[in-house]
Image 1 (tube, rainbow, N blue to C red):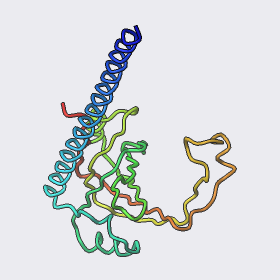
Image 2: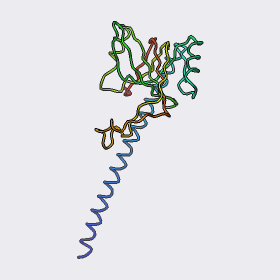
Image 3: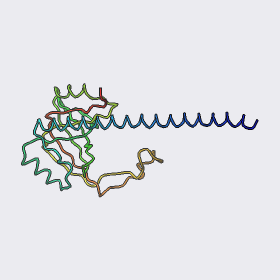
Length: 200
C-alpha cells in the first residue's frame, strides 16, 4: 500500500520538475535569440553609419580621444571635412524657417559628454520627420559641419537615481559634478541615417 502512494507521487514530482526545467530552458533560449538579434542589429547599424561617414569623408573617432576641447576645435578648424556624430535626437526646435536637432552622443567610448545642435533646412527636416517618432529612441548617425564649440563644467547632477526612492524630492539633492564636462557642438546637417529598431 505504501508503494502505491509513493510511486504516483514520484511520477508527479518528476513530471513537474521536467516541465519546470523545460520552461526555464525555453525562457533562456528566447532571451538568447533576442540578444543575438540585437547584436546583429547593432552591427548592421554600425556598418551603415560607417559607410555613410566614408561616403562624406567625415571625421570618425573624434569623440573617443581624451583631450582638451581646443584639440577638437583645431581638428575641425584645420580639416575641412565634416564630422560623424552618433547619437539620439533628444529634442527638435524650430528657428524661423530652420529646425535644430538636439542630439546627445551615444558613443560608449566617449570620455566626455557631447551634445550637438544641428541646423536642418525645411526640406531635410521633412525627410527626417518621416523616419522618427516622439515615442521611440531615435538614434542615428549625423554627418554635419561643426562651426562652433562650447564647453561647460561643472554639470548639475542629482544624488537621487531617476527611478529610485525619493524621486519626487530630487531637486533637493542637486550637486555640481566637477569631474564631468559637457561639450556642445553646433553646425549644419549634411546627411543622416536613423538606426533601424528591428530586422524587418
